[in-house]
Image (cartoon, rainbow over all chains, first blue to last red; front, side):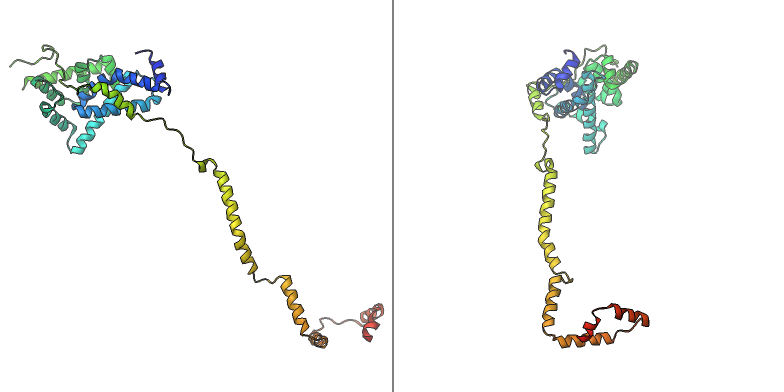
Length: 180
Length: 137
């Protein structure tokens, strides 16, 4: 993307705002969708959360201080939105977040927007048993192929800590799938 | 049992898909939902609040004037004209003799508060030139 500061100014200027925001949408809608979908697992939920994410980005853009990159700021918003959505949904259903996740994975076979095989369902089940932070790190590294430095800026964790989390996550996943 | 190793397996995808043309339509859907910049509306009343308040105060005062006048005319205090009219009408029923007798009756009831000395009385009689005229009347 062009010089970020210049682009942010375009986003804040009422004359260039719409055009710049459309560009932002084109640039980030797919990676953010994938990030959110990996957390909430269901397309309709991912669609809702993605819309809320972009609306929040638009609303709070004037408060963006540029301490981090626009990319990592948007990822942080989408992560928070997705996790909040999951917790609220679990609360409404009167189950824990992990129970909700397990139930959603069980329904993946019937999901029209899932084309995975048995091994992919097993992988999702294995991920679901991990602590929240390890889940996030694994998904961002393995599926989204983000660099550790990028994940570090998004999650506010050191690169060393992220590497350790990823290593533990992989070991747990391998043990879980082997045991099936 | 063969141990499962992520690195030994072909890269696994999530298997998640989206509806057809989802991303093509997504931008338009979000752009429609963006909050529009709100025009600051200043109410007419708010803008000219002081003028309205001044006009309201004047109107209230104007409405209070008739009420004030009505109550002030019913005041228990008698005005000068009323007293004068009363005196004029009551004097018509009273003759000069009645008036003198009334004054004498009032005078007889007066009590002397201090005794006048003879010299003082004499001085008054000598200095008062109208005294003779008054005695003759």
